Image 1 (cartoon, one colour):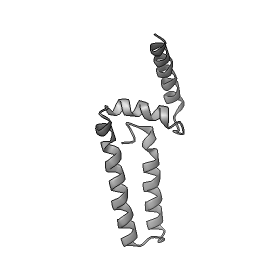
Image 2: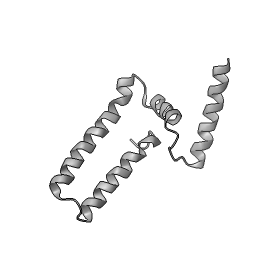
Image 3: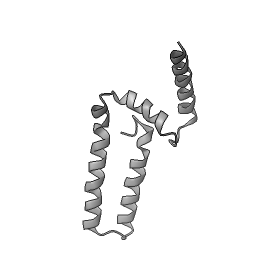
Length: 94
C-alpha cells in the first residue's frame, strides 16, 4: 500500500507504534489483538476506497496529494509532482 501512495504512511507509523507498545510491555495480548483487528479493518477500508470512488489507485493517489498536503515526499517525488501540477494547470486553462 505504501509503494502506491505516500498518504498511507500514517498506517505504517501507527503499526510501528502498536508493535513498540506491545514489545515494551505497555500493552497486554488482548488489547494488542483488539488493536490489530481494528487496524486491519481500517486497512481494509483504505484498500477498498479506490473501488468505492470508482478510481484507479493512481488517480486516487493524485487526489490524495491534492487534498492531503502534509505528505512527506522525497525531492525526486516533489519534482515529479511539480511537473504533473504544471501539466494539469495547462490542461485546465485550455
